[in-house]
Amino acid sequence: MRLLKQPTHTLSAALMIALTLTACAPVQPWERGNLAKPQMALDPYPLQSALRAHNYGSREAAAGGNAAQGGGCGCY
Image (tube, rainbow, N blue to C red; front, side, top):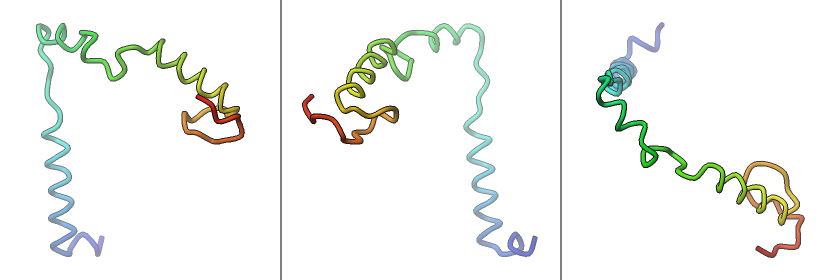
């Protein structure tokens, strides 16, 4: 509790709380249709992305992570 008495820590904590609370906004029922559109998805083609990740992992002879681990032939 001693750290919170310092002005910089108190100010930064208050700023973080304020930013967190302003990020929350209620979504009205008539606005939910816009959020459900395919364009709003983080990954618009999840099946294609999964197949590409599987293909890439198979060629690199590495499992998981989607990062090039090495160990394969190196051809892509």
